[in-house]
Image (cartoon, rainbow over all chains, first blue to last red; front, side, top):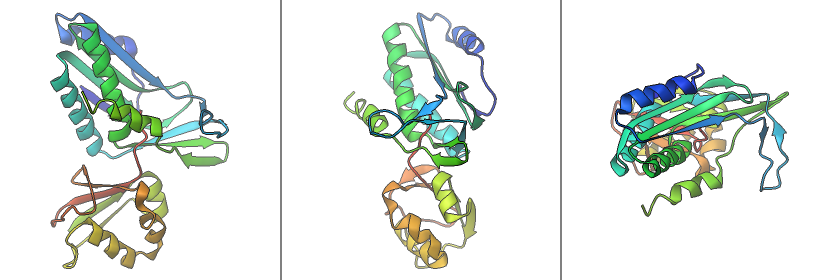
Length: 157
Length: 84
């Protein structure tokens, strides 16, 4: 259900696994996050920098536990038939896949909402950190206010 | 014995990823532990005295500085998460 791995993943294989596991499913939503080439250019007057590599550090053990807790919480809120979360770690290049969330349910709204909920919590609650390298420079990516705001919208629900 | 992990920008600033120490008698909670670490390692000052951006976990759960400590606890200091 949850994998933290350096290897890439196949959307097709993950989709088929979800379909098989879910049984009498009506809706499958899959989200794939991809490493962007340009970072940091929008909104706050910073100039976008070109990424050569993105290094993903994590806290082994806590990462898996926190992802499992997020998935459990989603399963309590929506009637989900299957859930899959994959997050890659280590060194990634622009346009590589970095994260996958798949949710299967009887109806589309539950699958959409659960996938969004899992991603919103994953971004701010699972212990992953990104370090961006551009040429000789490298820096840790700052947490974004918009990610905290994305979490806040679930507090009333 | 306490095990302390440091991650990402905090790991680089304190120049170590992990250390172990006996739980000192005068350390009851995380706030006390930070004061103790600052005495042991003066260069931690740069990180811990600007602590708005430091998260703390005890036994892999995020806590605040008032969290009580027991021998055997696993502690971690790290910046806000940026996964996804």
